[in-house]
Image (tube, rainbow over all chains, first blue to last red):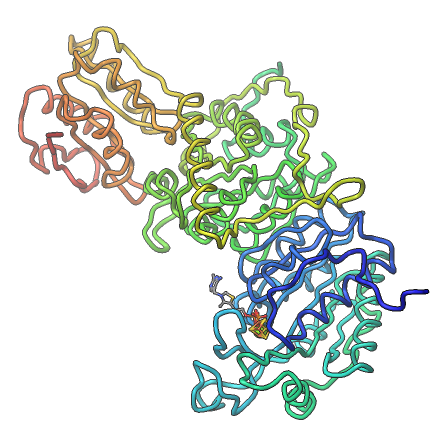
Length: 247
Length: 378
Ligand SMILES: Cc1ncc(C[n+]2csc(CCOP(=O)(O)OP(=O)(O)O)c2C)c(N)n1
Ligand code: SF4
Ligand SMILES: [Mg+2]
């Protein structure tokens, strides 16, 4: 009998702490499959951020550093400059990357750091209990925008892929979604591209993944996937925003 | 051993770091330490290293975290406001037990303060600064030569204990030129194996650099492990200099450049027959309590002199333990305590006179006096 679906070598055999229906798990699996397929497990170093994925290092079987909130791109810079021959990636949420770590991600891209960034955008602060993020949609109810995000006082969603694609040092910027199988397959291709770019020394690559937080969105896992498609994608259009420039 | 070279303190510190095998420097410009990153940007690439001017001190210290966790000999330097921004990162580095060296060529605060020499960051450096139960090993050099020697030592001590080490200089150390001799350094060869570093898990189990322990039992155990390490550092790493400790009754206490002014006060007063000695802490943490035990029976009073409104004086009082009065004299914001004022203050201590602010006004300068309180220890 030939197995058709196995746990990637680069994932540990651990039950994750993620909520049922949360797409963090899918993103982990995609990254691990890519690490396996590129055969780089032994030379990959991950940087975990602060958010629900803070314990990512328990699930990936590669060397890991846990960074302070928002600082993963700076930590990754330190690692990559010491080990330019190793493959260094960060795994960051939207609060981490787009809010407290906005300066670090912009300048990692501007410096043309040869790293790979996996950016999980679930439009909310998952770990701290569902507060508003800079990526929260207009009108979206969170625990700190209880009447819905109101643009006059709380502004508009920050589109990080569009923002970073304006930076010359960025080589590859793509936004994908994890809400159904075909998009998951597309996301994997983008992630693989982002790792391959680093191996080839092309510079800064980031893949933004539209992701669910059924718990804090107060939706069932299935409804959450529908919410991504119906509400998030119109605000966060999918696609490759920057390809093969800034080399 | 090289010939003496006349060098500016900041450049000498940078050169010493390179000779100690430091290959990575991450920093952000701030006066009065800019010659350190400038020197590094010129010389580190030659030495096969990497210099990055980061977007902020927040980023610099997190680059240091990454590089230290990856097994490198790494440093950053800054001055007071920049060091404040690094405090979160330093706490993480201490929590994750990573070796690195942080240079603070400190300036006057609080806030943006000024750019002149100051010793007002003593509390921040020695009492934590960032959050959590942690300690930095802190050296307070008083000459350019000593700054170089301590810089080299700092990297070894950082590796030995897997702990961040701070060189706390003031703007005078950074800006003045003095002759320095660079001792032959083994450089790279002296860097120990770091089997815990994140280098890729090829042929071994995965390594993890972290400071998060959500289980209270585990975090408690981690903190007590750190505590035991700090106790070992207190046992082994204390450095200080005592002058005339065998026959003195009155002791000046000072560190860094201020100690040099106090030494000349001591010498002048001894010539005039006063039994004045001096204690100069070199490690500010661990604080050299033993230096005070050694003179406990004989000392009639201590006068602590700082470029602050009184920070180290608290450690002096703890070390003296109420056995003698501890007085204070300080200037702040870039004003340097004058020889004449320190001497006047010391003469009053000896005479048992209660100080009055104007007693210490030096009419030869336009200086305005700082705090003149004289608080007995008990
Ligand atoms: C300096 C600092 N500020 C605040 C926090 C608290 N905090 C932890 S996770 C988090 C938000 C994480 O949200 P996000 O990055 O979107 O990740 P998610 O949990 O949604 O995956 C915050 C604010 C912290 N750990 N450190
Ligand atoms: S809180 Fe949200 S983001 Fe976090 S694990 Fe649960 S569903 Fe996922
Ligand atoms: Mg989030």
